[in-house]
Length: 437
Image 1: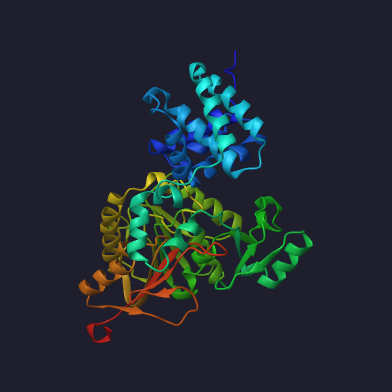
Image 2: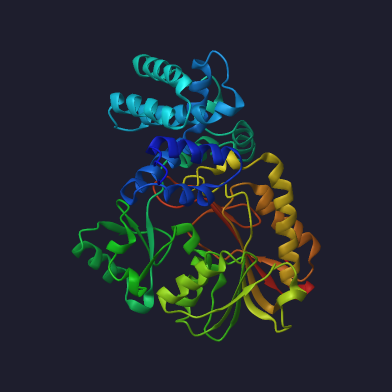
């Protein structure tokens, strides 16, 4: 006999429980989604992303309504009620359906003795409405340490960052200029009934008015366009790749920037893409094949230069380092649950280590673009300041651009609810001490 399929909300509760235990949505959501019929999978994703996005606010309300915490073995029922509260507060689902189906999901999870508690608590929540938040953590739906760090780092912008993190990100495209101009692709979108507009800062970007499945995008299967946030597209503006150059994309997966570099040089240069995750390299290859591009892929720790470098220097290096990902929380709301304040210092150690190791592979006169999707100076401008203090042949380039804020050691884009993610870029040129600024 085939096992009975769990209801949608029960599966969502299992996903949220897995996230609380340390798994990312990218890890656990696909596994759980395959236990459901295909037509339910988009609903599962919406439930899980929404519950993670508003977790701290929902958890504050639920905790205040519970007389005492549930036992550890019943923790999944806590998450089941969070999913239900998300729907009551942030969705248009009929409340009676949310209540009835959540009670049934509780029983399906083998927690029938708690069905009465679930029913009573959710009925009270529906009747009384959402309570006032009891803390900044609940008000802004972020962990307290992150709120305080943003308040300290960005005293004039922290509330805007938190608000942008809680907004749903737009769908942004990067057109492949080898298949036509941006204006031409905008015309193709209009003909397909997909409204969009040119992005403000990225020359090849188009932001859609609303997300659509990629198979509806004209020419997507043939490599005419890719999905990539506007901020991430800016990597080529300072890298300035040329078809005659030898280029390194370190920490390259999933390959969006690798492909952007190759498109910028009409697929003519020598590009090496490195990532230490064997599981993620096939994603780069898939993107290359769809876009009809070619690069050499290597599985390696980029910081372990002796493991992979052949001694031939690179003309340009893109170093998109592992980071806290605090600039892309709106796309990955589980970061609020997964990231810890204690993660930042070890990440900074990895970042400065990668920068120092890869600098030796850059030719004199070459340029290295350091990038993160973080909004914390500890991972961004302070890394560059530290590096310049250590490296006598490095100088910071600050060529005029219209985007981001000048930090003194690179440019910071903060997440904008109407357009781009949060990103940091710094461009370094290799030269002698006499060139140092």
